[in-house]
Image (cartoon, rainbow, N blue to C red; front, side, top):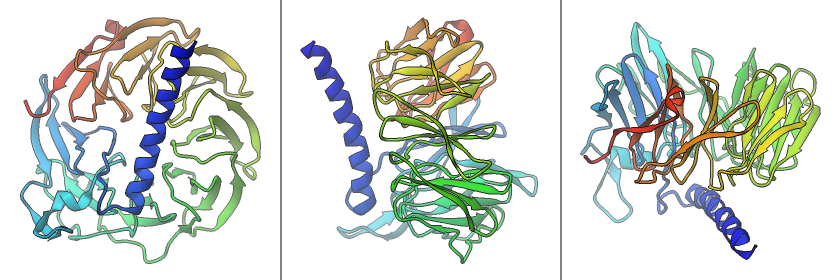
Length: 389
């Protein structure tokens, strides 16, 4: 019994340390070193992956994967370090938590990154260079962890300062007006639907805003701070919180609570909804399947027993999730029964949300390696790229 409790405490301390590091980094960005866990994206013929230093790399979609470009290149210099000497451009970006946004301007694909330092940069996917016409510096005035919302024309960027500002995806023009000034940091990505922007912060508030004017349509107080990304499911807004609860709000009216469900630990991974079922995983690795309409538990799987942040994926009839310890699990989505598990010998830390590409799932590790999982082939984990090799 003591042994089990010891490991549970250790997992909780590890996740607390992760949150503490982010909080420290937010207050002391010039000293601490954010790590970043941006999810990979596809853009044209490229797989775009965030690196731990705030740069991004474009990979040709081949096996093994090969790097076509990295932005920014070294040794570009801008600014000065605290201890003297020139500081590279990528050092000024600090890290990358937000998933890159993919768009097309003038017939050319570009990815727009929101760096931890608050810089917003558009990169031409074909060349790996700053997109033509994009300003040399677009800074939203605060650290960025949350992935921006995107309406096809504008990015809605939330910051550690509690602000939300818009950036034109074509010109890079930063809105002079602030759409929202919240009382606390925003880590949960803003969610946009039908002209309404939903924003949750660490002060336990979630607001529905008019995306054009910033007018608050409703404001609800939560039982815990929201760090994970929300999920829209019909009339419901599903919010994972740090008080271990998944909260379902009626977003069509005034944000009234429909139901809530309490898990065994913090919720950071974004909820997954499929066929009337909500799948959530706690930071302890416990997986829950809930009825979307009522919040009632259908099943629970506690066999992961490892810190988990990455969002689960439903593909080829299998619920797939990856852990901070590098193990990838495949579960029966109807019963929660384990079908398979695999862990590469190097035990990669898989924190970022995965990317579904055709019949495969792509994961990126904390070290920058790229892995592919194919559920229909019993989930064998294949490393496509090893950083530094």
